Image (cartoon, rainbow, N blue to C red; front, side, top):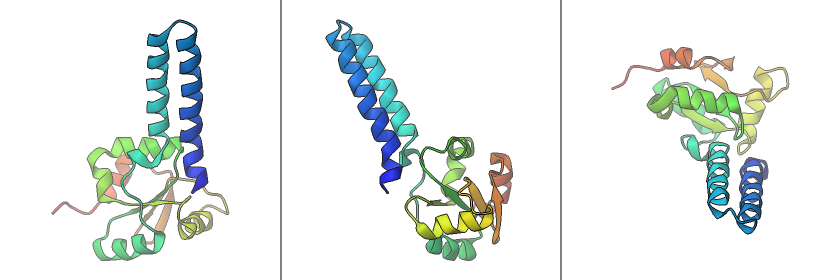
Length: 145
């Protein structure tokens, strides 16, 4: 869990330090703008932009019941972020598993990717697919009710 918070924390602290330096140097407006940029970058690299994660075991049970795909992801992954943004509102129709919070999810990803934690890994009907395109993932969603 510490790994998931490290990158956003570094962005926040680094941005705060740079903003304070600019403010003390006579540019408080620039410092505030820089801080805002770093806060946004920290937010994008945190788990905040993703739907609520669940455990791998729970995701498998839910997927078996409703047929929705499972997305294994981790904070800071640009490919995961790309998938999340490109899916838009449809992202909430998937089951999301943060592999840094769930050891079972990390094990599933390593088994599917020759021992590597390559994400996003999307599991559809029990078959893993590494870094699929957002359009393909959207096609795998069951019809809306």
